[in-house]
Length: 266
Picture 1 (cartoon, one colour):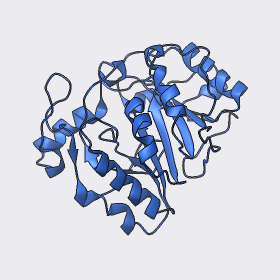
Picture 2 (cartoon, one colour):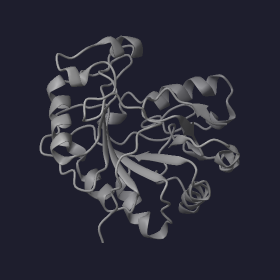
Picture 3 (cartoon, helix red, strand yellow):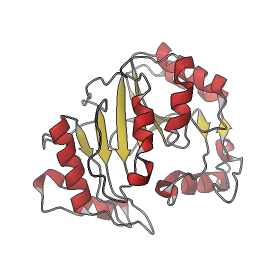
Picture 4 (cartoon, helix red, strand yellow):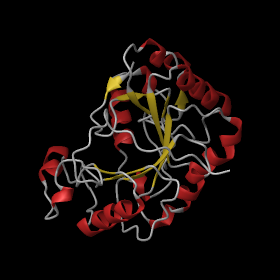
């Protein structure tokens, strides 16, 4: 079953796979890991498989759900869909055949726009030639600090209609990014217990880089211990207020927003 999402840059989530494993600093306070543990305790069938305690946790073992594949086929109205908010489609434990089936559903439902976000851009790059890339698919990678900049080069190599960066949680400065072929950048701070602070200078510099490159910029949140509290924090910079904004300084609505195409060069 799909869920209406509270994530500001999408509308609906669809989870044909669930579960994941930590691979970098951005995973340290994973919301999905915490939520999976709660859902397992509530008896949710999708979260009955446990992951490796060293990198995952209760209810968060990587699991494919063939019964969920047909969900978008039943949605009558067009939707902006975040694929696998509770997993990573390009995790090594997700079979290639199943990834192809997910792609086939996206291709069969051109009325929807799909957003796939991965920390495993290297595997995505390797598999890309064997996948059919529909025009309604946006693909992004997480870039939380400069230790994972290689993900951007891998992302740039795939023929997605839109390629985007999710710099959330932003854990350090990202100076002199190469935004060639990137169609959208999201930035935000970490929220929840133990949230690591984000410097306003990191965000402002990232926004300025996007402005110079002509890349739409979506500021999600400052972060903090609680979500509501983080949304009330304001910057001295009017373009980085508690509301998400594009690089033009105007409020951005995910349902109305469409970044420019960023096809891979051949």
